[in-house]
Amino acid sequence: VTLDQYLADRTSAVNAALERLLPPENQYPETIHAAMRHSVFAGGKRIRPILFIAAGEAAPQSAEGAESAACALELVHTYSLIHDDLPALDNDHFRRGKPACHKVYGEAVAILAGDALLTMAFQVLAGVKGIPSVNQVRLVAEIANAAGTVNGMIGGQVADLEAEGKAVDAARLDYIHRSKTGALIGAAVRMGGIYADADAQQLAALSRYGEHIGLAFQIVDDILDVVGTSEALGKTAGKDAAQQKATFPALYGVETSRARAQEHFQQATDALDVFGERAIRLRQIAEKIVQRTS
Ligand code: IPE
Ligand code: IPE
Ligand code: MG
Ligand code: MG
Ligand code: MG
Image (tube, rainbow, N blue to C red; front, side):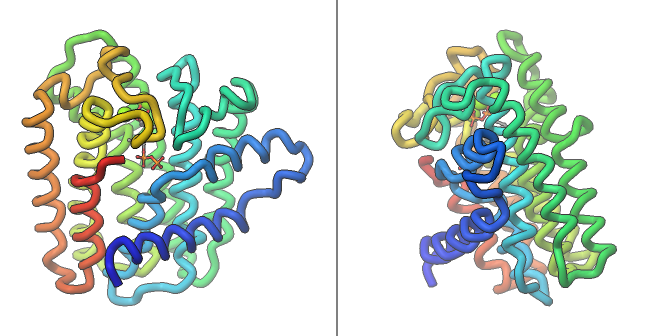
């Protein structure tokens, strides 16, 4: 099976699981469920749940039913996008090729839709069946830490906002990218390993892989904001420069940023040696992450 077919198959499995998990649009109060579904089903590469599943497949006892648990990542991620687009944060009008949540449903409902998706992620993990409960608790801890304020997504988002219009040094830029984006991607990989009961050595390898592709992912996001089109990205291109965001291209230029992403790709795949052939999908996904155009 080619990588594209693999990604298409996993995307459908994740979408089917999300469809089962999200309350229907006709569930009262309808507005909030419509808003949640608007953002979740607007599109999206589903890279975080797919990384969860692929990491589980690399571990020796790949487990069944991983896609429901993997959806927790997509729920937290989609919440972060809804809030990231709000006027008080990045003030974006488009997301995943559609109007941003608050453009359709208003700010109050968009804020609540984000809150609801975040909360639902924990509901989903609480409902996971078929794995040891100690691992289930570890999944909860992983996602909570990654979404939090200490080296987590919210910490990174705060540092990102506070860096707007300021000269930022390499260490601070590194903190922003590792925290706002790298943490959740790293958690996705580690959670897939935990779900499949990976041992300590395997989990350490997955952690290194996740750390490097997480950082590479945001470097490429920054590059695409400069070189991509709004049509291809499904979100407004060129907004980082307009908002004087702290980005890799702003600090290093596009060419050096590309070289950095490539270095992280190399370090990510080097970390997978312990898995041998079983990590083929993780290697291919890492390559896709640095070569993507959307
Ligand atoms: C965009 O994430 C926001 C970042 C953290 C860089 P993705 O590029 O994964 O967005 P979707 O999920 O495919 O829309
Ligand atoms: C997004 O970073 C990080 C999170 C949503 C946590 P960006 O602000 O660069 O993401 P885009 O470019 O709007 O997708
Ligand atoms: Mg942002
Ligand atoms: Mg943004
Ligand atoms: Mg961006």
